[in-house]
Image (cartoon, rainbow, N blue to C red; front, side, top):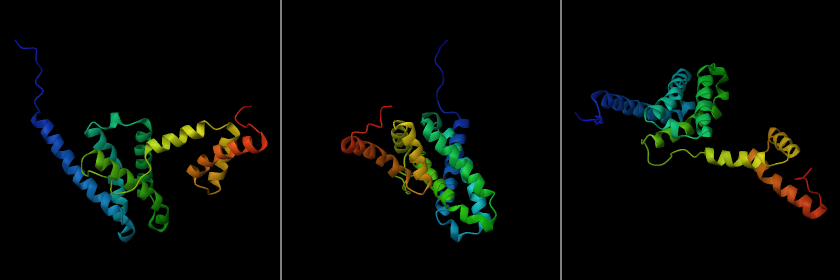
Length: 185
């Protein structure tokens, strides 16, 4: 009697893969239509975002990619799913709130399409989770008061990546020009 395990794909595996592939085609079609969402009827946009949000996770999990993502990438997908759901709940008169959320959804959908093999390169520009993690590391390295000032400046409308990059420059300038070391208490 053989102890080997039969690893040949089953008919069920082939059906699941075929279903995922068909869903990926529809997912890509809807995400491409969302790039021009302003030209579509609002109810159609709502239906698409409600469908695309959960498909992000379904495609990644169904293809075994979810577990390979960093926690930051998983958070990005979950956040975008929540944003997509919130867009699906907006009334048409409030649709102007949807633009940045739909843009995030399109970026995430594009990334998922690449990860799942629908594209060989991204079609939408994005800020990677790696870049975000680098900025978070740089932010965490700042002294407490400087972190608060970064947040204050960002809330006042300055780009957070710019403010985080400027903080060490300001600290270095204080040290060299005035002998003030803000890095040590």
